[in-house]
Amino acid sequence: MSVECRKKFVTNIKLCINCLRLHYGACMSKYKCTVSGCKGLHNSLLHDSAELCSAVKNQTVGERGIETISNTTRFEGQPEVAVLTYGNKCVLLNTFMIFVKSADGYRIKLRGLLDNASTICVMREDIARKLGFKFKSANQSITGINGITQSSKYSANIEVSNRDYTFARNVQFSLLPKIIDAIPVSKLNISDLNIPASIELADSNFHMPGQIDILIGSELFFEILNPEQYYLQEEM
Image (cartoon, rainbow, N blue to C red; front, side):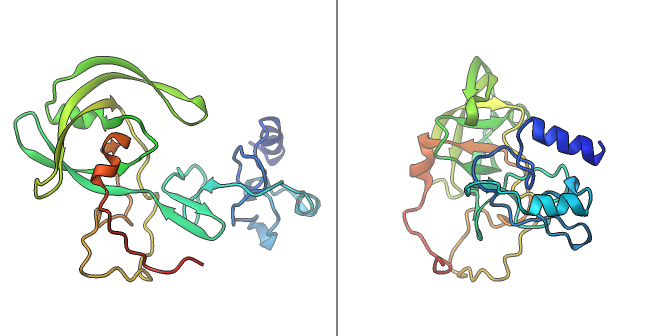
């Protein structure tokens, strides 16, 4: 699309001219136009001329809001779901490693996501097929943010456990082709995090992009969490 067509498109569907998303209030994105050092409060894809740059700089985008972006340089079309940022803060999603027992009795380690806002547990359908689970017809409607609904055709009863098998539960999982994009979307620099050597991380590769095989909802969320919490730095 030409720049003029892009601007019309963004205006017609009421997207923010800076982050190109639908939100209310001021845009919290730290990114500005990078074309020729413009630094105007509009997306670089909407940069047209010096007149446009001047006009957009004076435009108010509204009150502050929250957006989901990666903490590294963004690229057009890049999914941005792994790091929640608010102002200068970043919050990683809760990834962890969990074991599931396959149909033939083997324990397989999968990468999971903890989500206490979910009322169900979900597994990727291709993973469930590879592990030989017996599928049950479900035809379950799953509703997410903004009322977006998708259907899960199958479910399966699956045993999940920790590494040393001191915790194990049989849970009914809804099966979906995909849970979420890779988390995080790009490698994160953790050199400034002083993680104590005595702490065993739930996901030692939390800073490396990776697929999510399983989602654990509120049914097991608080059983899985360890009550001890360690803060690596004081909040600013």
